[in-house]
Image (cartoon, rainbow, N blue to C red; front, side, top):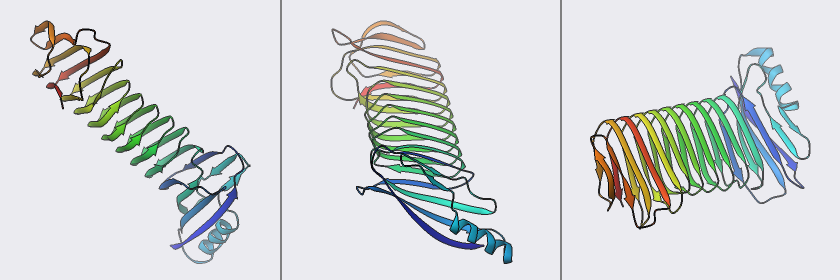
Length: 277
């Protein structure tokens, strides 16, 4: 296999949209302050002999990049060539990534981010814009994500810290662990444990899992209507709940004199913990 790297830069004078597609590239998107986009490609040309040399020459002279002033298109890979992409973008760029297999890492963007992968991990760090992620299989890691967030995975764990916008998560199988949540929360899992720590004021936290434990830790004082349900499992609540209903598999009540938030949990089989901490 013939390996190498190539580099391209394009001037940016206004809003920019970036679209990336491919069969199996790893994709890294980072920000910088320069008035340009820098694209770095690490390539591998399969085969040997004259055919491989021709494919390499064609790639170097005409890489899969198209720039239209306000739109940059990257990929897909030419036949017989493997590519990984590293892009340096203005923070205000909007991005859309669609890859069959490959990891995707995005850091520092402040506008819309769209990611779709068949299989591969996704890492999002310091994102201030709206985010949508779809993964067939792969883990999703979040750190300091401040915009509205929607994640849908077939299988894979979802882990996040400092998630400050509204959150919607749906996974077929996988654990969900989120810290520093501030905003609306909607989590649905087929099988997997759910652990969430954060604060509520007027928001609704709605969590539903087919099988798996649910552990919620609420920070500081709050006022909320609470409804916890499990078909087979225990319910443990250490908060000062004014109980309206407490029977096998059901706890319903309120915390505080004037509840404005709602906490709704339902699990088919699994324990539920609601505590402050």
